[in-house]
Length: 296
Image (cartoon, rainbow, N blue to C red; front, side, top):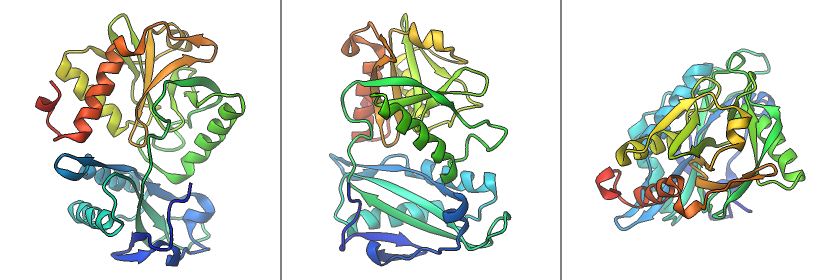
């Protein structure tokens, strides 16, 4: 996939510039050490025009990620939301994925660079894991230990572990990798949160070792609106295999149903599950107003 052409605009340090004319600092800490913060936002083509979904929350989270690891973040959330809408308009995008990226300046020492730069790009991108039920596998790689980096920080360097795990799963014929935490409990997929369904109750790994995604939180809110019980707890691999069904959540993914974990196929018919109800409600929510009266 090519993410930009000669006519693609990005937003960089307060200005709109052509993507193929943007430059990068070859001595920047982001390039050498992965010392950068990122986020992901979806724009949906709704009945009321193009709408960013929970953009303020995403930009506030980007700020929080930077604060957790000492990266400067001098930008204003409301202004960034306005610039993002302008970026979509300049690129004639009505439905898109948006990637804000905070890049640190040049510094070869392992101390925070004084400078930080903000780039926002956008491109057309369908659901990250497609629209069919996916096949998961337990990865031999673990989720990074929360005592090494704050788990709530969305830091570029952390995604090296995700790439390694995804590649390993793909070589074995699976769609996505599911990582355990350092204590042997189920944590999350390479870049998505996990929910399992068992006997009419949803379960999801509690915070501490996982990245607490905005889509995950949206699922918790939808479930509460529908009166669906959700339990946040430590989940063992055995509980994962014994579930009726499961699904993954994330901004790029949306909600993706899971067909199987390794050689165990989930017994429930997906369309009849509470998980599928959540998926339908989420799709409705992203295409309408952020008001749960719309989906109930």
